[in-house]
Length: 159
Ligand SMILES: [Zn+2]
Image (tube, rainbow, N blue to C red):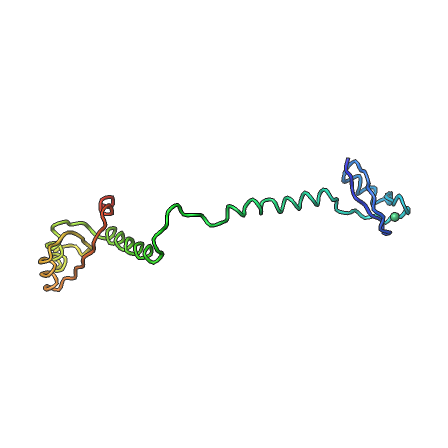
């Protein structure tokens, strides 16, 4: 059984009991629905109160539940300043880029840099260890080198 809230054109509200939605439509279509108070056949169906309440709470409930989850996540420890974090991130990114795009030639760096410079070795990015004297010699020969302090722990996994 379905219970519909009905109202006639005269504003009389009443309940109608039907076997199904189709039953209601059928009776309504054949003019069998009449107001028990005034006998008017011009009856319309009102949204049922229980249904309104249900849909209303259905819309409100998730919002209330979501609100606490959407609040800012509290950090367990005080973080460094954003400026410092960003500077470190940029630096680490640059280091990773260099490590990923250069070949580690280790102690042969100065020698390999010269070979590349003179076209004796394949032109590519290399990295390795040099002494300050070697770097000075390379610069004097017109070979660009730059020092990049690589943080511990970054070098290993990329080799
Ligand atoms: Zn009526």
